[in-house]
Length: 302
Image (cartoon, rainbow, N blue to C red; front, side, top):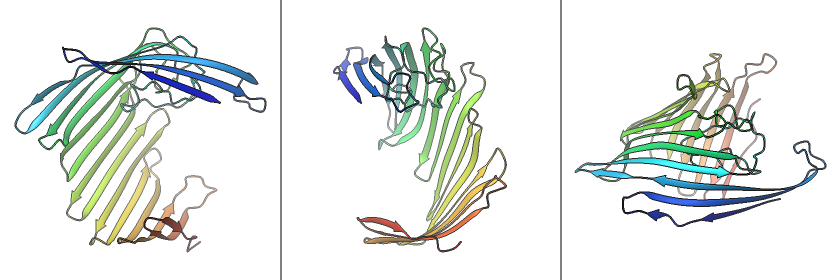
């Protein structure tokens, strides 16, 4: 049984334009684990605390067509309590979670010790408020090493992986996204995710490339959709494993949609690299009655 209490102080804006906010996190965990192998103590009660302070200095420049936002960020976190051991857990740091109090993704404890997370956000928006370009980068500095924190992102080292993201959207017909992380030597890439989308009249196609060195996971995928009219569309999706060069799956879906229902005919084929498993081929008919939900029938072919 876990109890969480969060005390947040009201954000303060200084005359210089600096924003500052603080939070105190309290966690109490009671464990009855007589039949579990995940905990050392059969019956245990633990209390954890974490203090977090966020500081930023947003700078805005506007002209006739665009606005430019430059925002340096600094987050200080300190916990006097010992964390549990997450050394071998696969936890990925991203721009979305690196400033979070629970960036290790655990419900049972906080990361111990003191750390500084620093970064820089830069955004360009058009006169309608739509994002045209964004670049965000962040890193974690720790006063002392913590061997209990995940090693796959070097969060327990004095310097973590360098995390970043780039987004470019010059129009509603094209966008490009790039997420990345480099090890704490800032030389080798540990994670790369590239995604793009093109729209030409009724045709939309998107590509995604992933390369994750820690898990040896790498693939290239594509999804394309052609909309005949407001009711009928046809889409195709496929993914190729870049480590082995083998195709993992492809899907072909026809869909009819109106105000009351969505009906679709789906053909899916999955490939396996294991020689003892055969490719799996399925055809489904899917019907959704709006707004009640949907139902898939059993496979129409073996």
